[in-house]
Length: 481
Image 1 (cartoon, helix red, strand yellow):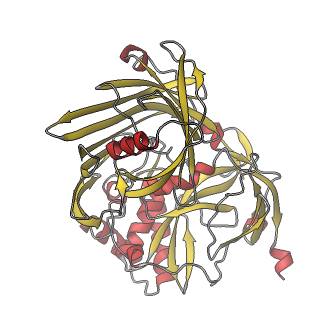
Image 2 (cartoon, one colour; image 1 turned 45 degrees about the horizontal axis):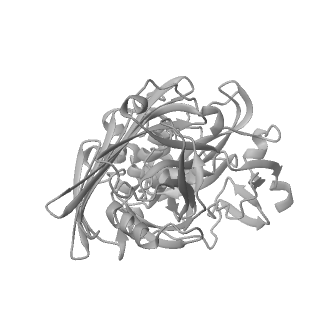
């Protein structure tokens, strides 16, 4: 029997903040993926009343399995003339779903207003010490200079994810770069952004004033390239790019149902010999490093190990898991019925969500749990977020997993692992997985990352797609007996 599963939404294309040092008031870039034009990027900078206002806007169009997906993001920042943060905002759009974040920085704290799926929230958070926004990063680059070999560090705050990542920048010797408007001699600056578990490497080519004219960063094994050009060039018709095939990982052999019902051992490796291949270690998945390879053992039945126990946040609502919303609370009670134990409640939630989301479609993109409760449609991400939110509404700690799931056949491909999403819940002293988009969790699931439903954190794990291959798949059930 051929098993199919929905492809999870493509990553939000929210670029890391780059130090657009004293750029023109309005600078345009064309956006290329694997050599094909997929969108535009606009950068603005304005100085008024001794404050600097910057805005970076990205609009792209991708395809997955023949379905066009429009993605957009815009980040703005207000800073003092000497680079101190004052305020920021972020807007992300994916297939009709919009998330807005606004923050005001004062005395080491941030007043936040967020809106996801039409549900507003207000809260306060600490501002990361020494974190910078675009103008502060620009000034840090100017202080460091462009002498080849220069290396400097900065802490960049990301409004879209509400956290900070350290950037290590290294200046390379100048080189000739071809641009749509003609070749120029520019200074390459290599940057490593230390995102937890998935560091990102980028390269920016800047002029003597440190204005960026070209930027490259990885996406699913290929390069995303931004090239400075005029507005007509940047907004010219897109060519489109179907990245679906890049997200599929061939299995070295067919996997039998009885194998998946037990324990599997996988050998994963990076063709680029990347030693920093980070995979989560859970109560269902153990990871052992062997050089640049990772030996990953996946058990269908979770075992109480020395894994990470729930944090207080794993029980609470957030922007994407609105577990205190009346609609979510009502569905949770309806799903759980008269079940009394956490395990039985989560099993009933899994079954309920599988039937509740009637329309299995790729058109949604990435919807919050509340959006799904109000409009039950979507793919595996919508199933995973609703399961996690209903669990929290029942007082059970949950989290959201991104990874790969085995499919004997999918979209014309045989024996592949497909990007997938599911939920984990803390029951009986261990993290146990629940997959409402499929008949359930089995040993054909490989976790790449674990988060709280926030798409930025969620897709950090999928940065491994295109950079890792599956070399061996062995049944380990018999070896354990």
